[in-house]
Length: 219
Image (cartoon, rainbow, N blue to C red):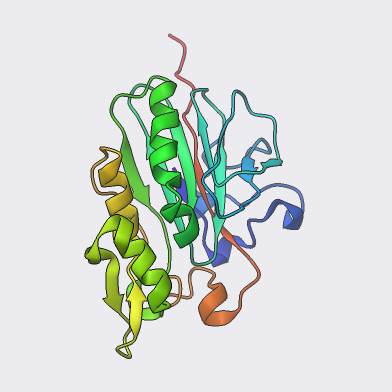
């Protein structure tokens, strides 16, 4: 599982010149593969199952799961939460979770899809996303989210305005699905210019979170 940064360039497949960016300069074999599967993000709760690498392609969904090895799954963001999921049983998942998708249950549905593929233990990682101090949010919409996931998702901005705590929304969603709180591997996209932010800087580019299961070495 890896996350690209601004330094890696725009991760949207239409912007690739020859190959996708190598997340974090890892040089891992599937980070440099052309076989990434992306979501054509619709801010909903559709989860697509990817049976084998066939990319670069985009599927109309907000989450991807796969039980196959060497099948990179990628979600793009510039403020929305990017969540990677993995299981020692093999299945992996990648989720684009804006507030609308999270409210629609995209994380819970992704966990269900991984379990249908044989996952019994699931761990989660939260990549870069906008944090509460920078995420002023309409009170009506905030009431909708809090009505489903509880008041812990309410917060305030650095200026004292009503805000949505998106990392907490991810945590509460995963909790409902029976998954432990995610490891957070990055900070706020609006505060930290290592990441793209549409809200703070009007960026059109996107960074990516990529998840894959490596093939086991043959004896």
